[in-house]
Amino acid sequence: MARKPKSFNFEKSLAELETLVETMENGEISLEDSLKHFERGISLTRACQKALEEAEQKVKILMEKDGQASLAPFDQSEED
Image 1 (cartoon, rainbow, N blue to C red):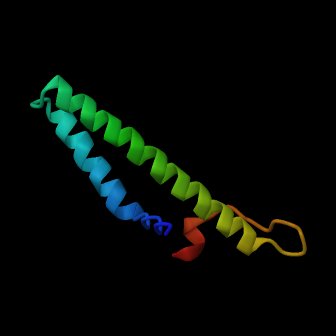
Image 2 (cartoon, rainbow, N blue to C red; image 1 turned 135 degrees about the vertical axis):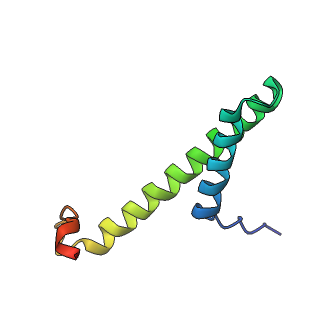
């Protein structure tokens, strides 16, 4: 029986990545632990990047009209 892939939690992964960076910047861990943290950080970075790319693709698909993309730059001043 095939296992269902784990769901990816972007916010949780990003928080973990921030914690890893803070720990490494502190400089009080061994070289071995630093390398483990770095490897985990790279893995999290790639997973977050993939999630962002997938979200961007979904937005593009949802915003497409009559085969023409209708994306416009976000202007914060219009929202205020």
